[in-house]
Amino acid sequence: MVSDSVPDSTNGTHGVQSIERALDLLEVLARADGEEMGVSELRAATGLPAATIHRLLATLVARGYAAQQAETRKYALGSMLVGLGASAGRRLGTWARPWLAELVESCGETANLAVLEGDAVVYVSQAPSRHRVRMFTEVGRRLLPHTTAVGKALLAFRPRADVERMIARTGLPPHTPRTITTREAFIAELGR
Image 1 (spheres, helix red, strand yellow):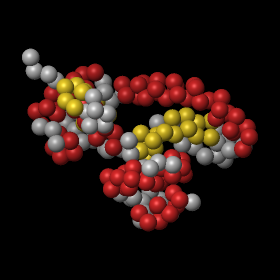
Image 2 (tube, one colour):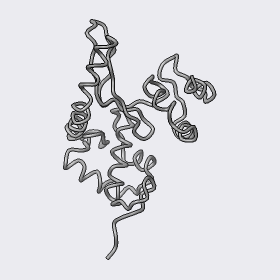
Image 3 (cartoon, helix red, strand yellow):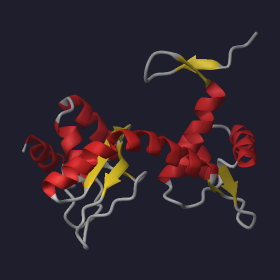
Image 4 (cartoon, helix red, strand yellow):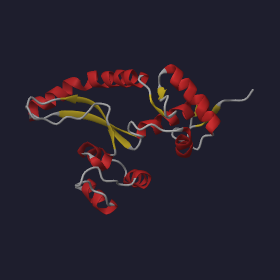
């Protein structure tokens, strides 16, 4: 019998290859920020054979986790992911809400809860301030850590080698005109 599992380099366990590949496709589509992608683009991004991509996407489309545009034949994330993300966010958000509300009460400003997930900061819960003009960050939004205050705070307490590897993978692309985009300046900012 042939096993459908491969070593998972992140934790040393064995994963199911087809699931890992399907998740790779979803993650690539998520990084496309709403842009549709064709099979050749997905193949370039994942290294998967076109036939494998077609088979996996057929299943993801049938289940609503991916969508194919009829005119372009390109793919995007499907609406089933909205419910999954909302459910995961509610779980953590429900747990954190009392602490976020307490923080808002004590400082008078909006409080966000974010986690470092891979190379991205993901906002998982928010308690808004009572001010008419206030900060708004969409729960579920993913940003590169060097572009956010919370990302910098999370990275400041990570081992420097982890931060260096992340910078090597993602670079420091600008998000605004004031984004720190050099390695030296970013490392100095984390030290502050």
